[in-house]
Length: 60
Image (cartoon, rainbow, N blue to C red; front, side, top):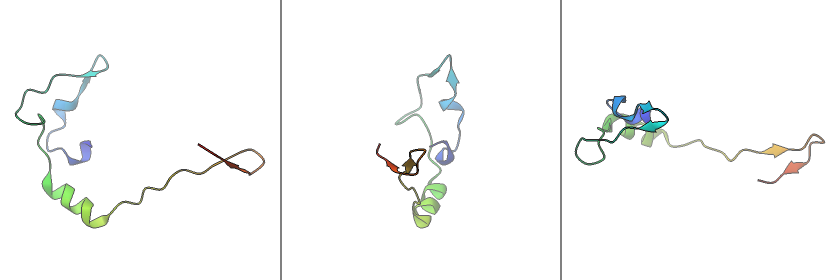
């Protein structure tokens, strides 16, 4: 998600938490150009395939 933020500092973790966002809306500004570029590229996410030591398929 940080790849699409213009300013990543509002999402900095302090003591394991993100501080309350005080800007309007979501509290962050989205880099619309980066989002549109990623949309044109599409996604390439694939579900991981796990195998047991003997090579057999392991279910989630």
